[in-house]
Image 1 (cartoon, rainbow, N blue to C red):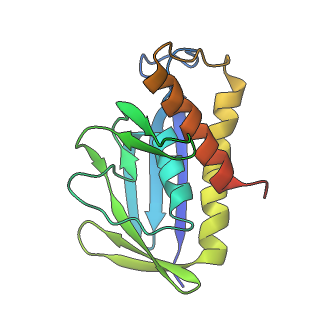
Image 2: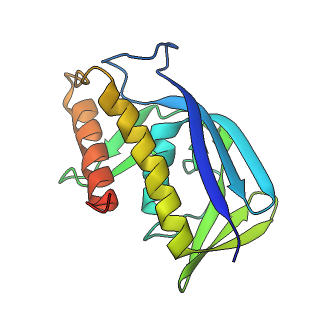
Image 3: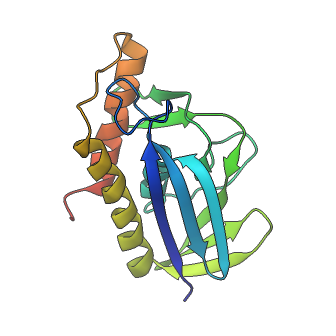
Length: 171
């Protein structure tokens, strides 16, 4: 089986500060190693973490109009009606790959067609480690001031509801 690692450093909010109670999306330098390939991008690491958590149980197929696994930005979060799931909309810039479940493994396919198959027993802990690192940074900052508009507030609430449901208590 192949390898997958992902990490992020240089965390900051969109204004470049290390703490901003009004900014809901964390940015940083993300480095993913997929087999023999290394992908590096200054991304919205909070969106990356949530989309990785989704890939534990769902396939992610890269497409021209969807959010990338390492997106440049997340302009807004679209909550579902019961605030349990969220879709993040951003711009067209980022680094993407597909994640396809195959039994007890995931096949990761890069934009250039390179493929790496990774055992779920290796993939899941790596995704959890990455997500936990991102959440720890949020928790180290001043608590967020939720948006006054219902759409923005509900999007952020749905983001964390989905995150915590997908992450579970397996820490």
